Image (tube, rainbow, N blue to C red; front, side):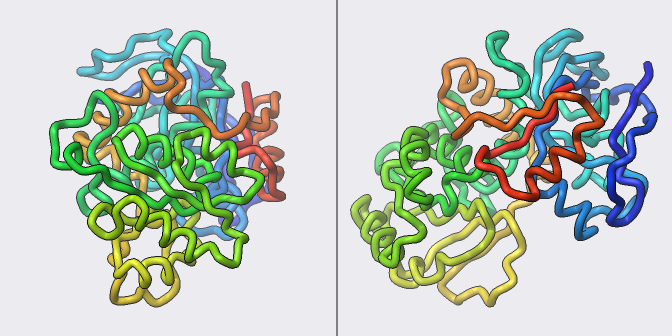
Length: 344
């Protein structure tokens, strides 16, 4: 099987180099996907520009893939060749392993973070989800983060069902933020979020009960009032910071403290009234209870029914591997769509 990839040739290497790549057979619990589309995330251009996270070169970037199953590994029963799937490619967090990275014709992926997509859903629309799903799920459901009940059919009988809980999602218009909103709503929570006034209608359509303009001078007071309207400290589960920029310190101070799951390293001093934990999506494959509850039990049905959808349509760039660098550059410049997608 002939494989090709968009390689990052060296530390801060630019542009990406299109060249042959090894085709690797799947191991136990793995699949090979013949890719039809990639989504590009901010981490991709940031690794290329700043050189962090990647220690081995040449190497391959890319976390979001969609396509057909090419072959399955030992013990895999949920998937078969020809199935239409999306997956979170874990090459970057998994020891910088290029075999498991996205930007190539064939990617080895883990079953734990892969799911079927509806026949009616185009690959370019489905591929925006994987990294956002894994990042949101890790922060929302792991017991050392926010420890929410699992969504929808995967949810077990817990005390949450006797008393409604609420969550504040910081940055609800982002890809991860919009996914976190929908997962939290599916888990039975009331969601408050921050977003621009322009994005507020689309974010509210995802299920957020209250959307507060982050440009408003009264944002802090509005968020505190919203939490108190849902029961205050007794029902408040904490904050999911989907953009990693902080700014919630005064909110938590006025609420008497709380937990924060944040997607990026936090460089400021953590106040004593804040319990802070950093989300790292790459560890989700090692936590099967959470991965199965989200990726196996919730996401396929949610995609079919429309309970899980992107906030806005992606920006699609056709042309295959040769267009990945262009897609990274466009995302770096800033785009109005949540994701840039390259189709093969």
